[in-house]
Length: 379
Image (cartoon, rainbow, N blue to C red; front, side, top):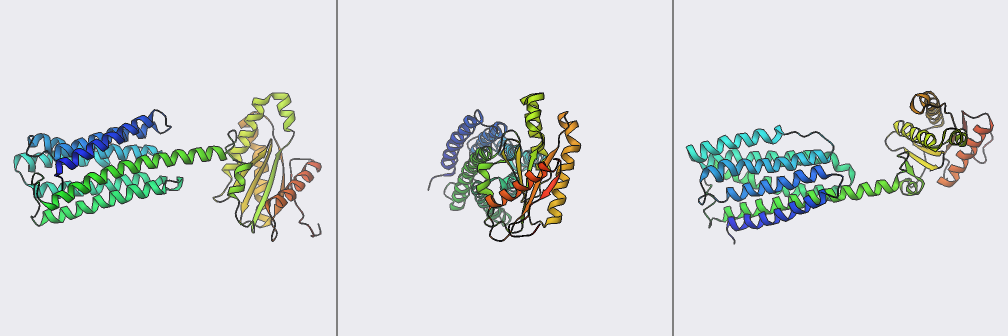
């Protein structure tokens, strides 16, 4: 089995390769800030590990007092980069305080009064803490399609944490041996697991980034660029297997062509964007809002009976009329058609009902909500 220095050197080379990849991706990514922190953090953490495993070859002031805190700072940058990726503020105290703690403990028990067990009893819990912080930083991203990448990082972090826990228990019983005891099987396992886990964590972070990029591209393809709503093409993949219990509201901006002709297409685009924002703001989790084309929109409401669905449609109408002047500088109204699902109905049929109700709203004077009459039901 290779000695710890050889293991760490191999991991260092792998870390440099992954750091270079992260740096290259940063020049082509919207998440450049996170990638740069990951790249620098990877190099610092593995450099600190290389110093640490060089105990006996370089002075303790360098291998311990510099090496140990350097590893923590490197992992801390991985944590900060993950926070940035999730759109959260950095939390440097999560790793700065542990790094300062290692500066003092490494000097006290590494140079002044050497005690390997004492150093391990401080160092190992800090690494476990940092692994928890890294996973906590990534956790808010779990709903953005990064499951595989998050699992990759989690398994590696858990494996490293378990090894650190075993090492802590080993040290508490006085059985721990220095890293330069090359022939010790336990040391070999510790450094093999530690080095490979860190490389796996780096790989998992890059996988998380790539999965986020894929999710962003998918979202961009499914969203109308002007309004932020789903486009008509994306609706098919979002519709539930059965529409039972849903309500559909068709929304059409009144006299939209006149807005374009009188105020210009830029003003028309501003109106469309405002309507899209209004619809999104009134959606509950699970509801769908779609730009069907031009000035026509669809809102699918989950689990709503007619009175509640009508109240939502009426609220959309009044809010649009009330807020439009201050948001667009124009007086805007909309006509809405409401249709309720019946057993076995599909979306095209439901849309035809809502569209017929919408036409009735326009014929009845516009700026109103009309309810569709299901086929076979007396009005």
